[in-house]
Length: 501
Ligand code: BG6
Image (cartoon, rainbow, N blue to C red; front, side, top):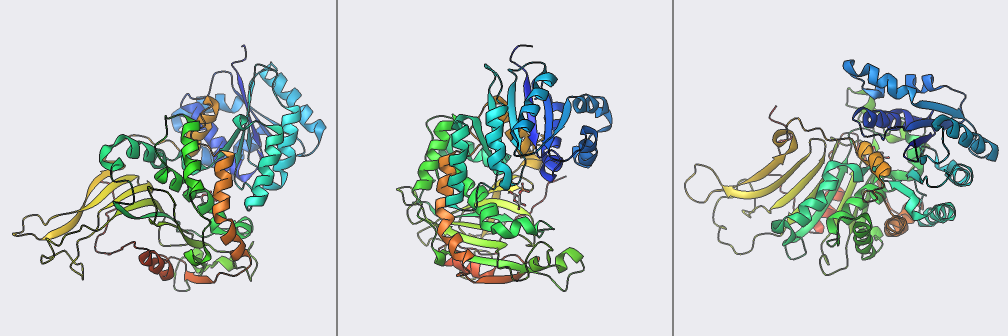
């Protein structure tokens, strides 16, 4: 019916990402009524397999509920599979013929998800553009996901290649952190609350911490990981994206281009990170653990060379040279195989000046100093926003002070509200043509520029890799560096990470 129908192509349909993330996401979107009427799904890969086989492999990730089986069957019927190479013109012509037949028209809008290894990005993107474009008025959108190169140069090369075959308009670069509820909320928090926007600057803020922790190792993904390391895997993309949203000036509107303009602008104010502002580490097995996984160090991962010095932990300190942020350290820390899984942003305010309370009892602070206020945006798990502040110890006489928090834990305040998965939001955005939550090529280039020199130093083994034990909280060297830059950790306050039920 008209040009309103869509075809969603999954390239790499037989692979891991397709099975674990892309197909389940398409199903959830379909289930929740977000997929436009008349949409078909076509998987493409080299293996001679069938649609049935793909869905069999993906079954355990689909989470189909008992009352959803009929709907699920309907969804599965909208799927087809075409086998072919990633580098032969005929195969892509064949694919387009199949697609025309399946959707019964040549002008259906086409979305292409490349769930592929980077080695075939080049040829696949070229051949899709040459042979698989819909007839007018149908549009096409290309969804790509990291790795976008390994460094500034290779990333720019890939961008140039894509630019030969696609307009920037047609390219959707996924950074799945931009699909997370709390990351999307930063813009609303910052720009809709006067009480925050007034203090969001170097006059009030002492340091910003952006933290990513995982309690698992590379788990057999070592082969991929070893070529990249934690800075390319998490910091250059996910944490740098968060940083740009935390630090950008107020965009003119909520339009994608206005927001992305501001993100690029603030990234351009950042000098490349200096080697002395980097701490890196690699995890070793915990011989005392009863958990066999934790006994394995990074070098025990089958895909990892025995003499690898690839970091699985890194902390970098970034400075933004503009009027709002000059001198404020942004401390980005990411690590695998630590004690917990957690991602959060900590905005630490400056110490309260004027010693009015100096003689009073301030909890367990050995220096008798007041604790600093801190705004914590907890991205995951258990989404929350809390503001740490000082209060009079309830019920006590005099001015005994204790640390507490204003607490907006989503699981308590928004009981029963379902937060969609990041991929669900992002794929829906692509259907809608919304660019807010995708990475523009100039953002990507800036993010690489900032980490490029330290990656080179690390690859040349010029920065020492400090071993840490699986399950540790972090590296003391990193905490010391954060303290040196003015972030104060007192350890006197413990956030109770629990929902009331
Ligand atoms: C990916 C990284 O981009 O993000 C992985 O490649 C990491 O190494 C993952 O585990 C974390 O994503 P999430 O959504 O689980 O925090």
